[in-house]
Image (tube, rainbow, N blue to C red; front, top):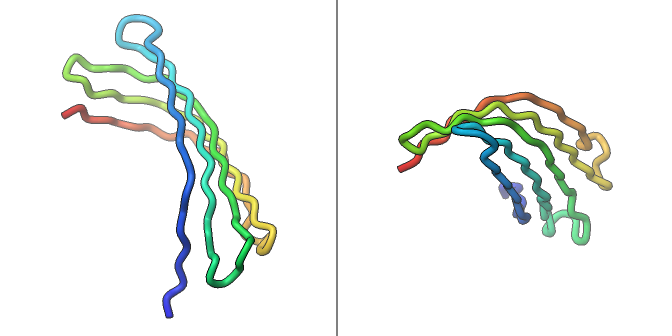
Length: 95
């Protein structure tokens, strides 16, 4: 049998133009990982928060630089608990 989980959660993203083509963005999310077949009642969670700056091109595409903090809490498997911080870039195409 293959092991699997069902991920549920929500994401929030707020983007505000600040001047001309530049914007600021704030993001946050919460996810629950449901392994009910193997561990009923225990649902590890992953929280994520961050923000960034972006440049919007006339064609609707956007390039951004972001910072993110993510934390996973797993009461059943503490060895799978983590804190992660990262910088990354994004490119979004408008169609």
